[in-house]
Image 1 (cartoon, rainbow over the protein chains, first blue to last red):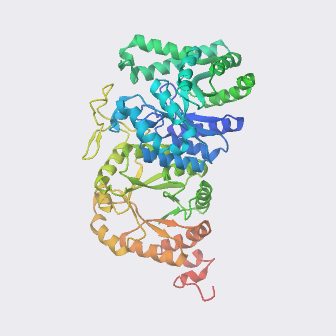
Image 2: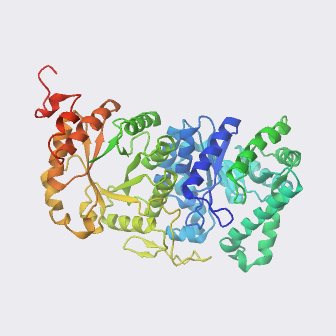
Length: 299
Length: 278
């Protein structure tokens, strides 16, 4: 949910469109809808995902409600537990709690939290507060401490979208060797394109949006993105190469490769700032009707 | 007088939705959502109601001070945006956090403004400026999204009323706060410029129309109460809307309207006492 220079949108409309997209995904049989969180952001990014998902819960009956990711380390344990319990109750038990660490110092600093203590805070304060959901908790990340934490506590994984398929094996091996028995999920930036031109346009806009965000706000190797143009360009290229942009056949082939490497759940991002709501709904249709049938029997 | 309806029993979303839909259908103003054992986060429930029931105001009574006020502000702003500006946030001091309550209110108001701010209080400093948070530090913060309302409607509740006056905020009194007490408290505040027009509400329990009517008439006389938050079952809503509300209004209207406004239940005009056997 973002209102950007490329697609200015009334903030209230963003939430109406979310509900509309979720209703469609619910009807088409998707397993879940997953939202992303930032706070103190510039474009209307949602800082309270469980509240946004309460809208969805009230208008759908089946689809599960996940977060990729909710910035767990920035929340208050008791407050988060109340919000989760309420959403769990009013949705009939549909919560998939995706917890990430967060990475922007400014978000931690506003709340009086130390970023360098985020792992400890997640471990010692946040996870114990939502213990009841243990097998419905997904930890975001790929670093050893996250894999170890997820394995030890019985949580599943949501891997970042920038990992290439051939890089999955060592990560999953590590998780499994640490005793991890949860489900393996991964985020993938996705766009079903009718032809090469549509694919190029999607690539261009995803790259531009990535550069805007990462350049101005993210910390890459110790500095802000724009101050480190080489690193920023490398990250952009990685994001684009890892993204699933193409025809249904091309996307299905990439998904099959991920499945062969051990991925069990895909969190496919199809909501960006370069398309209309009608195009978003079309993407959801195409994933269900053109891509999913090509995956039958994939293991 | 405006009316918020509070669920008597809020065990499930269905209970709350039935009441919210009936409140809307009866032409009443909104619902008041409070924490219950099974639904402990009223703002999450408010979001769900917003997705199903149009127009109706979504008042949520929450604790303040038990966590960072910015997080409460973010949640209220998201629900306000998602509902098209329907949120009323009533905040009472969390148990044992009375000493930070003033800062809670100030941080909420700063967060609901669309401009960046710095805040240095006794309990919270925003941004904190911790030495360890070195990357891309910000000297001020802007809480996003901005609420849909130009100023998100913020009420003081739970006895924090001395904090309401100087800030010009609305006040939601508990059922137990009596008229004489409220009258004394509001005597000076009522004419203080900051408090002009600030909403004055009290929570009530529905028993029957004459009782509620008597309480509301007295409260309006005592401290100009202009909102009522009534814990009532669905079956009571029509009576609240078509008997209690017009009766409260009638006192301030020219004489002669009674017979037009009281065709359904004429006994209520005669001292608001039902006839024997009625």
